Length: 338
Image 1: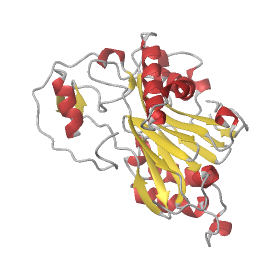
Image 2 (image 1 turned 30 degrees about the horizontal axis):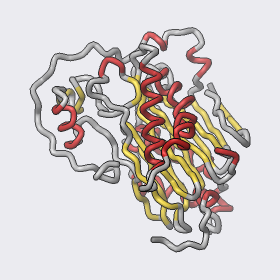
Image 3 (image 1 turned 90 degrees about the vertical axis):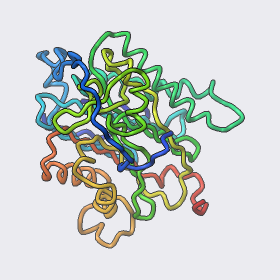
Image 4 (image 1 turned 120 degrees about the vertical axis):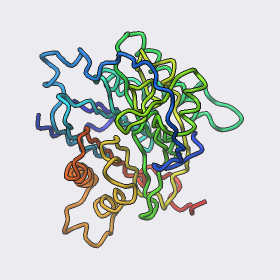
């Protein structure tokens, strides 16, 4: 998979607004009436193409403009994770878009979303100005929903979770649909900026049941209609009655205490806690750390370390980690924390 950016080209090395903020959202889970199982394939026919393995290496490491990405394939035959980076958005080096996408039932939805969602958000920005100042959040929402609608027209059954970060004029707008997660380091303290959309989350379960859907426990995992473990995603044509692409969004100002942002698929977060991830990445990402020189620095090294840790802890899923150096994008460097 090639990383496409607007601006400086990355180096690529390959070998073949929720009320609950954080990864541990409250869930009051109850056994529901078992629904009729939908015939949603775990492996899409789209994967059975001669060129599929050539398009997606088993491992990928990208070093870009104030960001880095590392990915490793899990136990499935093909990697379904992908990512996107757009730097110099609107011609400004301090404006950018980043995203991590975790596909399921094939990777077409992930690839489509990665290719289109950033531009769809940027295209929506001029028409979203209002008196409340939340035009960026509205543009992100429009970008997610437009991408979903465009992909559904292709009548492909796959879907994708995603987490994105839009940086405009010193503001960071983080959004997600599904169980990819964003975690920020504030002077070494982790803070999750998104909350995973799992089928067993109480507010998500209630939303689905209000739409006459059912959340059912199968083999220890809560699933929508006995099939999908996440409750929000782009795509999932056959589940669209219940699986919304509506993102949860949070906007913060990038202040001097904001060090770096981790965007990652659940292949990482199922095995590594938010604070662990920050603790491991920080020596490589923050300047003037005492052990930075001896360890070898840079967010590219931090990404690799986090992927390796998840794999060591027996993560069976694809693992993708993106780290963005936020201090480059801070337009108010002397501003104290609010």
